[in-house]
Length: 79
Image (cartoon, rainbow, N blue to C red; front, side):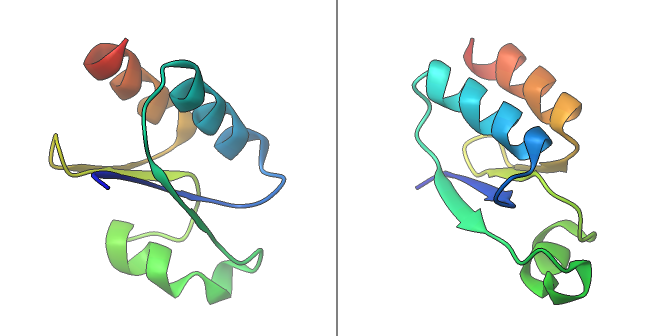
């Protein structure tokens, strides 16, 4: 898998990104994270921060956070 989306169950920003990826037929792996920020060590390791969503796209060599930035990237790169 070349794309990984770190997300939290029930997070509207995460759902927005996942829905758009699904609409465009973009394959990705979901990594579900803990609700407690203090328990999101893996997210911090890959992105430098603990917030979600975080998208890692190996095809483009990017790791990014913040749903609006991710959606802009997806639109430019895949739509």
